Image 1 (tube, rainbow, N blue to C red):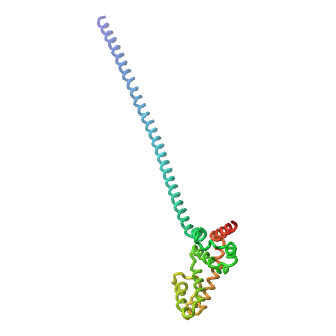
Image 2 (image 1 turned 90 degrees about the vertical axis):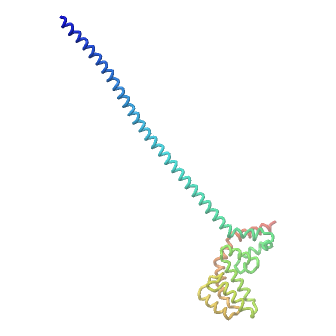
Image 3 (image 1 turned 90 degrees about the horizontal axis):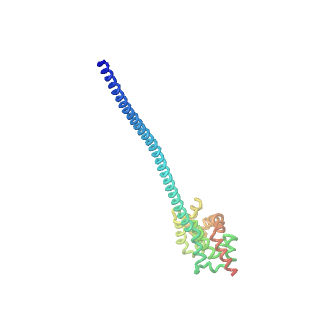
Length: 252
């Protein structure tokens, strides 16, 4: 009986010991899953953080790319506007260097000869090139216009020929040589636009000059001005503004 009781006690002790072990194991196993869950949660959080970080990085990258694109486009736009503005200024300066600069010199200058012009005289310039060139004011006005078109050599040659015809015979040679070298020869500083045969014939005539040595070349240049430059002169701002100003002054 005593051995049996001892055995029971031992069994009871063993059962208690097992229960304690189970509790301990349970507690340990309970902590372990908790830690595991915590670790897993941390891992998940890390993954989420990684995902969030990735998305944030992508978002930031997109924003940076967008900002860079906007900055580039803005800079490109500024460059385009700057180039356009520069071209606009260059164009304006070019235009001011041609026709418009004539107006103040001819119209607004108090000492200009054109202030004494009558509306009738300026109107007569539109009748023909001959009428325009028949007066000093008409010749000056037409020359200023041709200068704006870089073709004033035509009027200069025509005027030189008109002067040449009035030259005394003993001075013809010198004037003929001067006109030929300045307007006719192939490398002349103010070379006129005439055909090869006329240029060659004029060169031969200039060697043995007569009052009519340059008549053929002068006629061709006159026709060129009459058909080309003169119609543009009548439509130009220069002529129309001059005519309008003089007509307004005549009504005062």
